[in-house]
Amino acid sequence: MVTLLLTLILGLFAGMLFLNVYFRVKVLKTYKILVQNRVEFGAAHVFNRQKMEEEIIPRYPHLRQPILDFSNHMQYSIRMATVLIALITLFGAVLMYFRE
Image (tube, rainbow, N blue to C red; front, side, top):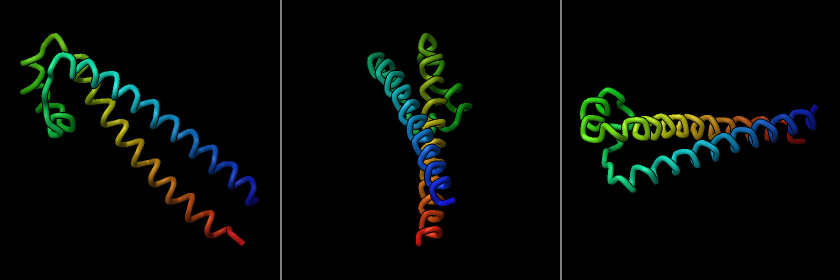
């Protein structure tokens, strides 16, 4: 039982870690495009799509897709990191409970 649980925990952890790294790489690629074009916006714009559409997109209409991609990838990466932290905590608690 403990071996199966440990294997499941390690597999889920590895999968979540891979997904998190994958989306962070996508964020950095999009970020590079935005930096090269000197696009500037704050964290409030990243998390508020309406504010992004109203204030940033009109200034950089030719970069609409990279801007939206960056925002979406950032949000997803943060969600994945949150899930990863929760899983690490949960798995640690489970392993401590079954430790004998």
